[in-house]
Image (cartoon, rainbow, N blue to C red):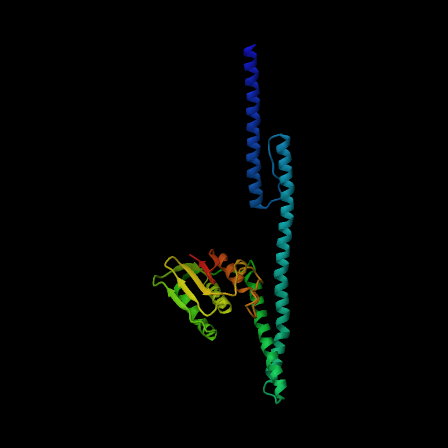
Length: 292
């Protein structure tokens, strides 16, 4: 009788062991298949070799969720593409009449006219120039974010590009009462980058400092290649800083801004394999960028 019980127990253990093994096998198949589907973005469903009903139901549920996720992804891709196209078309359509308006205003400047009319024309000219700058920035953004933008990599001396960018913006910084404190390492820092894109990144970061700085700006380049732009910005908040890299996000303190400068900087930085982050502490905004 004891032997029968032992045999029955052994059979039960063997059956349970097989059951556990098949469940573990199905679980591994589901995990591997699910990861592969997310990576390859294919229409193939999650497949398991076992016949367990619960595991089969789990696989079916995952396939259903994958299909919903794929549909949302496709809608996002389509919407993003349509948005880029719309930005390009709208900015291009606005540029033409704006150019004509600015041209007519330039023609009217030398004409004799009452003082009040001249004052109104100066205001119109100022607003038209601001719109033209914003439209140009919008158009350049639509070109930059195009997936087919080429990256012409070459050996770039980051020290020199940063120095040239600061010198190019020195007049604008001085106009806003900002005298930058610059600490650039004497050690040559080089990387395989697109020089024009790197210049655009630094220009956008300097432009950001002009918009948000309360009068100071510290710029550093370390031996390791980390570039930091740090300035006091009491009008910002932690929430603002968390969204600075989002396209079209603007802070109330930033006049005549599309909110695209830092978004472009992030896009270009990541396209060249780098990282860019922002942090806010003690009323101080610090942007860090690593490209090598």
